[in-house]
Image (cartoon, rainbow, N blue to C red; front, top):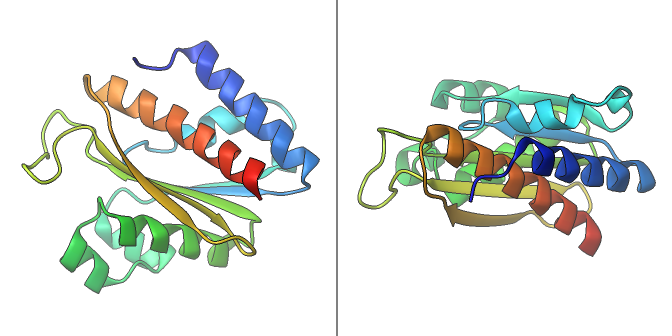
Length: 166
């Protein structure tokens, strides 16, 4: 079920509170969500206290130039893969100096899917300079907006859970 605007706002607020309480800043590295994770986090005034910025790296070229994702990973595994989202997190942390990073790369549809990576396949990673990066894949259903909305919600919850364990 796609997340409502209210659910996204609540997830963003919860994560903001955690970041502030831990005195951490966050950077996003987004592909299929097109900056939506950063948008949710910056909807509140004062968000510069916990958001360093967001990198929308929709193309493979942008992933390489802005985040240092290797052409080997892109060629061997594709943009929608665990190695790529892990490299996106590492690159976002290195580029910005943020305390925590989240990366999202997926197939939002309606086209672009394959048998191996159908529409709705989204890889996520989150990590920090002191905690190991975690990565997970999710399979969402629905149209493009629904897949993206679910991915944004999952990313916010994932970082929140990551911080809860750190």
